[in-house]
Image (cartoon, rainbow, N blue to C red; front, side, top):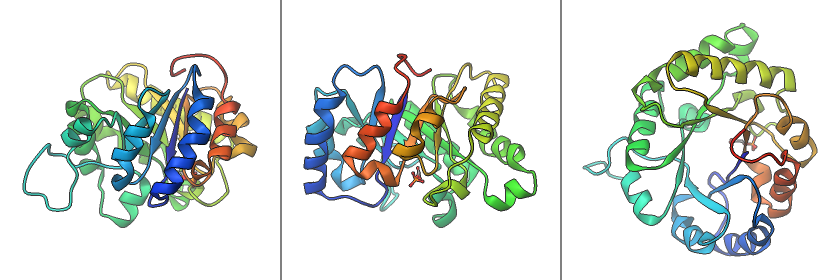
Length: 245
Ligand code: PGA
């Protein structure tokens, strides 16, 4: 399973130290991939603290060029130089507040892959889109530009916008349907078997049900991932099979 902590624009240097002290020793010899995604300024410290541990470090975004005149943007190549292994791309908060489009998200994912980062590519419908019965259409529209990616492993995070930060997670049935759709679509596109993880109000109380839902290969956790004890409880709720299945 893949269990990723998206700290968003939260945390501090002190918090990172105590968090790693609490979490890292517990994660030894787990059959999961644990990914910690703190804000950019904490990445070097996170890489240092996580070195030699089971926990890998991810960024929350990157640009679609490796270098260039793009003031304020972050190069995927530099993230790799830093020791970052993963990147979250196309998060709905980027799409909602920072003008991210399906096209720019896919371009970022491509550049990230070319730099050697593993990509967690976020997709998901808004409440209005779900109520209009457009969920699959939206997922397909968001996934379609990924045709530019090499058919190597991209991880897709299904994150219904209405479930993010709201305390209302999607039901196992809704999750299973969306994950099946994403897997089938990616297979049709020649991308092979794609790991699909779920995000949106995952917490210790609902983690076991969500992580045991067929087709769920892990979780992208926001709010609850800031607390080492809560994130550890979520990790413990994951089925113990290895790999990304
Ligand atoms: P949440 O966020 O767990 O706080 O709902 C998930 C995410 O935004 O990735």
